[in-house]
Length: 67
Image (cartoon, rainbow, N blue to C red; front, side, top):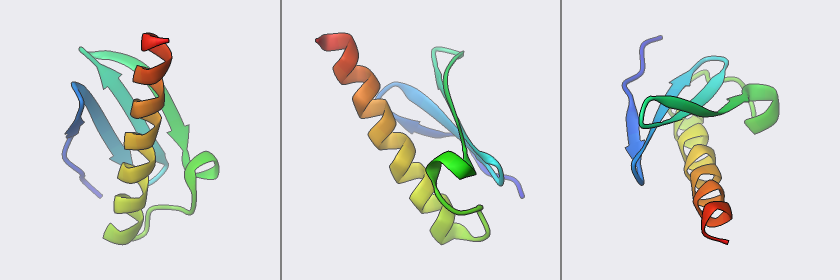
């Protein structure tokens, strides 16, 4: 299963069957496994779920940096 890098708010999201990794300027800032984020990635619907989860996590990371 090969998935492209997704970009969101100056971050990169790498999805895989085991979860996702968030990078900021090439530095790993968050790793979430499927047990943390939902069911295993079996099809595009689950990948979309993981991307939504990652985007919300990035929003929280940015909010924490501002406050």
